[in-house]
Image (cartoon, rainbow, N blue to C red; front, side):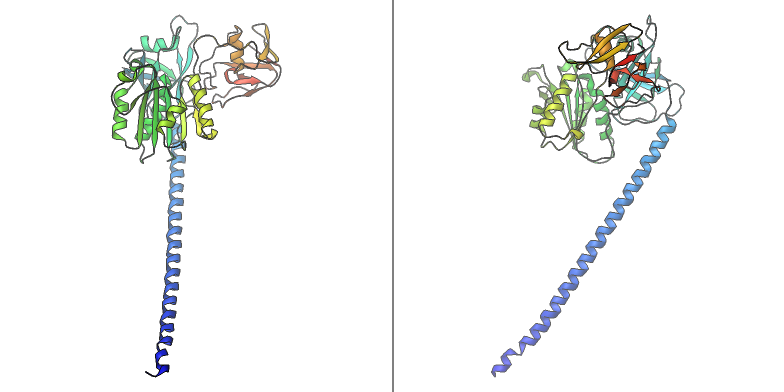
Amino acid sequence: MTPWLEYLWIPGAVAVGAVAVQALVMTFNFVMRHTHEVSRRQGERELLHERVMAARRESAAREEKSLSWSGFRKFEIVKKCVEDAKGEICSFYLAPHDRKPIPGFAPGQYLTFSVAVPDEPKPIVRCYSLSDAPRPDHYRVTIKRAPAPALASSFFLDQLEEGSICDVRAPTGHFFLDLSRPTPVVLIGGGIGVTPVLSMLNAICETPGMRETWFFYGVRDAAELTMREHLETIEREHPNINVRICYSRVPPEEIPDGVCHIPGRVTAELLKTHLPSNNYDFLFCGPKPMMDGLCADLAEWGVPTDRLHFEDFGPAAGTPTIDPNASTGPLITFKKSNKTINWNESAESLWHLAAANGIDIEAGCRCGACGTCERAIIDGAVEYTKPTTWEYEDGACLTCCCVPKGPVELDA
């Protein structure tokens, strides 16, 4: 073959290569434009979805605000159920006596009751957590008999029956679960502190989606356990929900069968043995020692403080005490009681200081929601240690959740 003929294929190959490169570039540009278009449309759909959800939330908020009420409203107990083996825990289903619509609530919130206990000079104000998901026609609270004198809880359990009438304020509270977020959560309840997180759990069960949820419920023994069958059913029927009932005073061999029954106290160490990571929002309610321990140990585990949410209200048993060796602060004068006391840094609030020194300031919720502890400030200023929902008067304070900024004189 003539040598120059051997190279005739080169121009053709170059032309074919150029066409191929051009086709490749065109294909790449098409794919990029298509990907960009798909991404743009996806972004538009997500933005539209968020706007629709925001509009729905705004509409729901307006509707609930229109259905809410100020002051106390009469509710009828339409159902009463014993929830434990000892008969010390009961659920009360409350329907509005006027049969008008009621607002929903955020799971974890509570109701405030004014209880007219016989032989008491005035009604007792108490707050009890809602223990079920929101329902259109009734609320549910679950109440445990508190240690003596336990006037309010004993009155509920011993005196109130189906058909009884209660005075109730609208649902409120800063401790609640945001159902609009899909982020994984850990719900923890200790003893009767399970009620608000049980409300959250039930709401998750009824909300579309597969939100990863861990539910830890600490009890001393089976006699203290409430709603066992309900919790076992949730564990069995909801693959996204893991229920663990933790028994602190039961030998391992006596713990009921089933994956949701385990030995031990609810501690950070126990959580580490079950959770795949610490990447959760933690919401918990229970005895103060349990909550203090969880807060400290979860923070040490690396959980950011903005992911730790807990409920902190309810009268404690007995008279509050203060540490006599704690550092002292400004003078606090209780005018009606004719007492002046140095502020003690171990006191959690002005109410705490008063109660520890024999000064009677009535308190109901101890979380700034009921207004029972409101007292006028004659002189001085205070600051609040937690958010409040009660709208107190100018020149007054909620003594259950405020501390002095300096010398203070109260009309108490």
